[in-house]
Structures are given as C-alpha cells and as structure tokens.
Length: 309
Image (cartoon, rainbow, N blue to C red; front, side, top):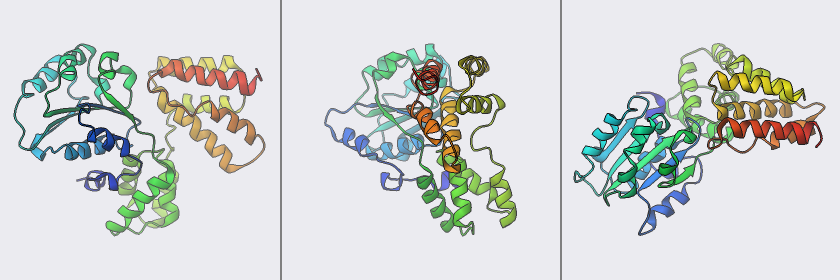
C-alpha cells in the first residue's frame, strides 16, 4: 500500500482546507445527490468523495469507485446503471467516478436521466481536473465545489505528520523543499517523500533538488521566460499556439506561470512590481475556460501590465 493511500484522511478534520460548505449542503433536507468536485490532481477530490460517502451513511460495500480513465464508454456507464436500484447495506449507495472528464460525450449523455432523477438512496460524486470536458447538462445538475491547490505550508504539515508516523528522519528544510516542489499536490508531495525516504541524507537533498517543480517541458519554460521578460505578444502567441497544438493542459500551464513568478519574487531583485502585476492576471483558474481563458489572461497581462494599455 502506498503512503498516499495509507495516510488518506478519513474525516474532514484530517483534511487540509475548509469543507464546511459541503457538510452544510448535506445537512439540507432536500440536498442534491449529485456532486462535482473540480481541481488539480492530488488536491483532495477523491479523499473528500470517500468522506462524503461516509457522511451520507454508505457502508464499504455500498461505495462504488470507478476510474473513468479505464471506463470511458457507453457500455461502462450502462453497466453502472444496472445496479442503481439495488438496496444498500447501509443508508446510501455512492458512485464515485474519478477523472470523469475522460468519459466520452455519448457515455456522459447516458447518465443525464439518472442524474436528473436520482433515487433517494443513491449519490453520484464526479471528480475532474478538466471540467470543461464535461457536458453542460451534467454540470448544471451537480452541486459543484472547486478544490484549490494546497499551500506549501499545508503540504509541509502533511509531510511532517507522515514523516513522524513512519519513523523517517527527513529534516524540516527538506520537507519544506518537497512541499514547494509538489506544486499544490498532496499526492505528489507524499510520493516524493516515499521515494526519497530510503536514501541517505545527501542523496535525499540531491534527489529533491533535481525535481522540476512541475514545469516539465521546454515550451512551458519558454512561455514563462517570455512572459516575465516582457517579450512581444507575437512571441507569446507562437508559444501558446504550439502548446495548444501539442495538447498541453492549460491549467497546468497557468500554475507553472504563477510558480515561475513566485520564484522570481522570492529570489528578489529589480522588477518585482512588474512580476507581481503579471501574476495578478493569472490567479484565476481556467478549468472551465480552457485555452481561451489562458490566452485571455496572458494577453491581458501583456496589454495592461507590459504594453501599458
């Protein structure tokens, strides 16, 4: 069992962040039975799904977990629906569909009626890092909650507790370095901790230092440099177009641009005000707007902060 699975929180008290809005929604007598959890990978969507399943009274055998990366077609969804009316062992039957954006559009359409008229004992929890690929008819049927990336301090707290529980000996500085390299993902942070835990202290430092911090391709790095070097829009446009053609995920690019700016601010030097100004146009997620939203954010940063419009 991986450390990430072993140390998955079982209650909201163990989660990092504020989940009171979800619990309050469940307390309403006529609350929705369809939830859409959005946000980057490793930020707690699946963990919270299992917690919600527990809160509504689902026993272990009544929680059906489906990884949509492996079940994308109409037949997969129809197979799921065949068991919809089965009586649960506990109070509820919960279907957790991870990576739901990977389900084909025709397969998503087969769920429209069940999501519209969900049996009282059934709950659907859809998790997605790219909700723009989910058809609007499903998004309007769900209560949506956006999970932001975890902060470095939150990730450090998680790593510190696991480091102690597992009897590892990583020092505070190395744990914080891992937290910063993980780019808001608890899964990434814990996996790094697990990977380096068996190394010597010097090897641990070297391994963590080599991590890219989430910027893992040359074109994204080029865009970061062009952005903060205040290059011309024509250069940005070419790089953005190439990233789009190569299928790069726009939200991961946005986070990389922010992370690059953060590194510049923390290192200090001339131009901090300009860096902060550019970052200001990149703080909003682009899960729903995709590449059009990312392009608009970049153009606005150029036009208003660099060109001076």
